[in-house]
Length: 438
Image 1 (cartoon, rainbow, N blue to C red):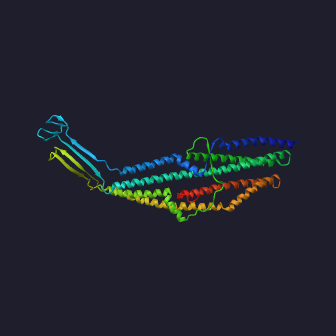
Image 2 (tube, rainbow, N blue to C red):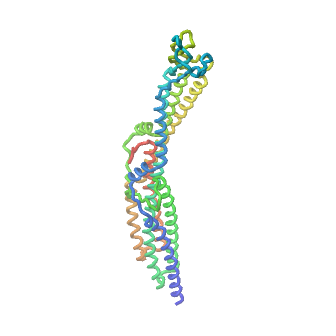
Image 3 (cartoon, rainbow, N blue to C red):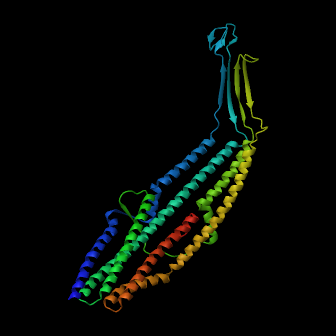
């Protein structure tokens, strides 16, 4: 009788304790149901990212700013007007007197000159070339920022999908364990099972509850970062729309084609290419600046030259005796050597990065083969049979616990493998700068 009452007490306490656990679990897992659910596939998420991201908008303004400097470089220098005229004449005791006297002779003096600067050695064209290259640098910097943000977007997007898969798995296992626990309560009360069996299932539920809580925390972190990238505020929950399984096929592109595509599209590499071009153009400009510019223009002088009304042409240019821009030319040459070294380094890094991403994708695809997919399917069927086998006392509790833990571990690895495959594809696309694998 005492054993029976003790069993009933254990069942009663267990029911209260696990009712609290279920309440906490429901609160954690229903967080997304309280929020407004925003369902997005990859294309919709990328479109929202391109339309709304403020950092991209700021970088776009930088491109427009650089384009405005190209227009400015095309402008000619404004002409310069010089004038000099008398203010006061002692003979006439008058201010600003101009014109002629009674005999028709000029009275007063004034001088007018218009000057125009003419840049020699193609300086204006070279400045335009520099401004155009600066626009290309701004555009590739924009693409680099977009690339980094897009990588964050897709990583969070796919991670959330994986975490939602974990949540479904945990919910399924929790439902099965709760069902088993209720069945064991009756068995324990009837004295058909030992108390330790009942406690082992309780311990398994506690461990699973901890996994659910940690999974929910990771979900919140990924949701927060993804909403920041998409510029979403408020109590919204993003639900990625993705197929459960990811296709695992090798990209139909050769190594040489990958490298050629990467050199044309990788923002970091192209930034170094255009920076090299910019430095080369700067050297040409510095050499051109050593050539003197010419200033010329007509001038008119009344009553202050050998002729009463003097008309002449003024031409001036500096004499390059000491300053021939030698320091800037030498500096530009060293900048080219420095940039050529950086370009070589960027080329080597790009080759290594592409090879590394390609090999990682191959390894991930091998792990996602059809044989492994068949294994996961068979293991899922085995798990469904394990619960029935334990209820029918065909296997022991230890065997059941071992199968249960192995099943959860295998399913988590399956979800992780799907995530790794998606990330491996995006890493290769990201480094190449184009969608070479889908």
